[in-house]
Length: 578
Image (cartoon, rainbow, N blue to C red; front, side, top):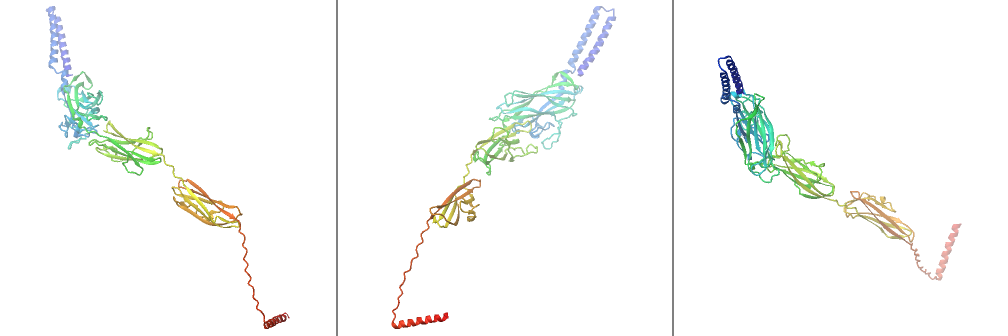
């Protein structure tokens, strides 16, 4: 710009001189026409000579682009949290545990990590930088979107572009919280103006391109631009990736001077193509996600088995074991969803993971699985429908916290649900007997006996005991409510006097009702018969034979004495009468 102003000034001066020479030529009539013509020609040649000399000897359009120095480097891997990016350019000390590096190693990173790069832009302390300030430049970058060997890892997205003004969380011991590499008035802005992917991720020779605009560049300033990119790993890879990745500063140009005055066309800034390789990409740490699902009974312990046979109406316990076999990379926001054995999603449920998760990303939730970690969970489900239930659980986890790739794994367990067997029905056997089995028609006592046997497989309770002729609530008062185990017998005995007609029978029936705990009932009955027989004839009372009385033979003297005795008895009777 300074050159243009000088050219204008010189041109105006030469035009004034030319005008004066022309007037002098016209008023000098002693000179001929030929002389006037040669004077004008000489003036024109003089102007052209001066212009050429200025263009050759004075700094101009191609000189301003030399006011800048550009340095491209990567943040030292140990200086920042790879989940978020960071670090500081500071004084450009080289080393993985210092400020920056010029080459990266795959073993220092994990899938999903953020890789931070820095561009230090220095404005020379020259007059032209002061005259054209503030200036704006553009920088083009390229990043390999696939490895140079076996595919599987890519730099797939530009996550952040900004001047590194913000507070720095520098993990290097003894460092402060600002980027000491910046020396400016704090007014510069870095903007990602273009980002596009040439090709597809994990496809050979694919590249991610980005253009960054940096403004408000003034004399003697140093501005550090931070560029964060993200590493992506192909979740479907079966072979270990090989080769390298690379980041490159490919072009730099001056686009505006004096603030908003465009430089047309933009002028190349000699920075050279600067590259930063990410070597040995096969050493990158890859998180893994595995789930193992088993099933056991409701009271069983985990882990269970892959298959279980139950009866409809039973409850099972599903067991879940989630692992991250990777030794150096955590998984974030891990969860398990069970499809509940159906194809639809309306009845899916989220498994409560009870052990093993932690807060690796600092979001306040224990939902992350550390490198090499194991987590477990359980869920109980009641299965009422007979058939085969194949139940699938799907575990998911993120490889990073910013634009993550979600890893997924599934496993199933099978439950064979059988129709429940019909419960055994209660069975009883009732027996009634009479003793004797016949009595005379005039009647007689009969001893009755009632027996109830539990012939079933479950306990039963006697609900009722009744008889067609007798009141058993009196004769067998403890029958109702009696519990009988399988094989047990209840017995009741009583005596009744019965009468009837000869040729008829006394027939009476006992009825028993019993039930089990499920309300199933059993009934049985039995009959006792007593015959009536004719009354037997009364046997005559045998007559005792009469023993003859022997009368002794009277002598004469005896006769006289007997006659005298009888006389005396008669006299006495007469006297009592009188």
